[in-house]
Figure 1 (tube, rainbow, N blue to C red):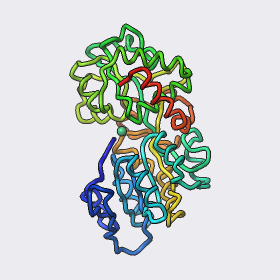
Figure 2: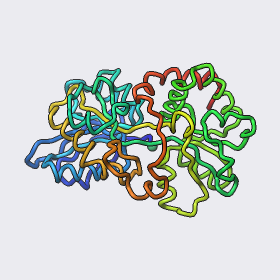
Figure 3: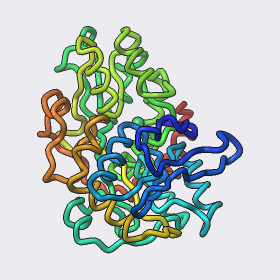
Figure 4: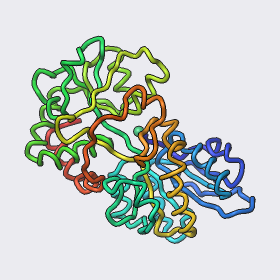
Length: 347
Ligand code: FE2
């Protein structure tokens, strides 16, 4: 889900109050081409898929102009930090708990006391200091080529993928990826550093490494590997486009801690001009806006009162155990995860 600054054509659909980018490189300037009445909320978003639908719906429902800019997570964090008091960003949305944690460490958020967010979002999916809130859930789990492996023979733990029998049969994501780092952080939390290092050494011996989950799934569908690990929604998207794809999903760690889950989410920036508007927008995303937020991207709603969208409800179901690890631990173990992958020589 990496990205560049988006073209304005993406925000064109909003019609009013959209941001135009004067330049696409060198930290391009934002220009507002608003002019409609009503307050304006500005969002920087590292989360791309389907986000415009949520912005549009919120504009209609709340009578607020939403301006937004999408981009790479780290670039947007740096941009908010560099802009400081001058930033337009009232809200920063992004993917991966590690990214949210880093934004909090960089003091880009302010704490938000909200009954609606505290009751709607489970405590493990939000910051213990209320600076950021998970809004949608993505599971990073085990997938397999259904033509090449029987369901009963698919390993069901991340640790088992290190066994010698999977040498040359495994596809995994590269170590520089946020999702991969958060998965390894969750393994450190469960198994400790020493055991995690051993597992990573096994993965290194067994796996072909891919730069993104989409390429990994394509390789798997073509028979290049039998078993892999991806975020569930990438498989959902693939199955939506090509229902005959011979790839199945197994929820990992069901006899233990539960499948690794990550989040996309956001917070109100420390420099927000419109703190109340930012808070109301997050509250809407956590409640009435949940359906729209997850619809296009096939994530699970973070709010347990909201049903997942039909495709994942019917294809993957809702009856599985999730790792209850606090999302902020994924951030606090991020550096250790990167270090261990490096030590293990993992791509
Ligand atoms: Fe993604």
